Image (cartoon, rainbow, N blue to C red; front, top):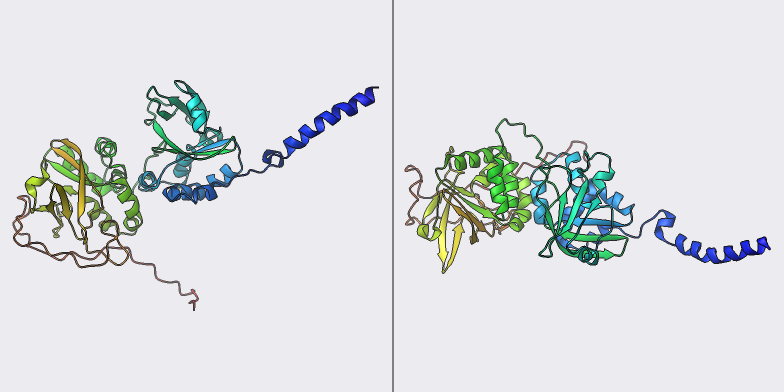
Length: 400
């Protein structure tokens, strides 16, 4: 009878329906929490914080079949240095969220091929054209590249580093080399133009992305570097590694505006220095000295084959490699941020040395010819120029 057939069909379909409705998507919930996932990875704390502050973390948690392209703290330091408006920050982070699932195995299955994938930015409806769609390509050498689609002036591709977390067809977290896009910094109130793209791009391509980002976001420092570099009269930059910049960023953000400018200029020498060992035990003036009554100098030391830079911090910074030598510009990577002031209790000279007075300069050390003749043989540097803490509100109730 037809009725018997209906009951038979229902008996076959019922287990299938029950199985489908036991999945998280059937109940409108997901089985992941991106903040909890990233909390176990210290290298992604800044990225996780950006996901939360922009509200993107909540959107990720509301979706399934999703891939998050995470970047480490050093990369985030470059983004934070731009001091973006909230909407620009959200756009940059939403481009890191793919609306499809890609784990390491799925990437390998694309060997020699490519595909396109929409991002959370495309889904927002705010992306012009296909600017929120990424091209995913496996190159001949096996590297996987992600690049923004649409615009002919799209930024360079970023590359897949490793898989961090995989929950098949629910969520994957992959580490990539950089952000898909870096929005322009927020306009500064000063009229001083920013550093030329050529100079900061040159630094970024030679391992100085974090430092270049800070320079680009500080108009007065950017103008000085731009002017010195374009003049062709010689410039040497001691560029802190990205991890050192990331570690120092909280202290940098707490400096006064003048303190930030002085610190950035302290890493530049107004001369082309091709051979560092030629100026060992020589006092070197920096760009922070020019136009001021202060003499912020560095002393170049040698420890065997290693070149060290003595600043105000107790521990000297080590020159790790020559990043660029293309006269009249030389760029050397160093393993620490150089401080032109005496460290304080909550600052870090290499990124935070113990508080100690600035070391006295060896009075016998020669001074590079660029040093003004009126410069004193030695001087005590001022303390770290931190911003003043806000006064407590009169309505504040003191705690016990």
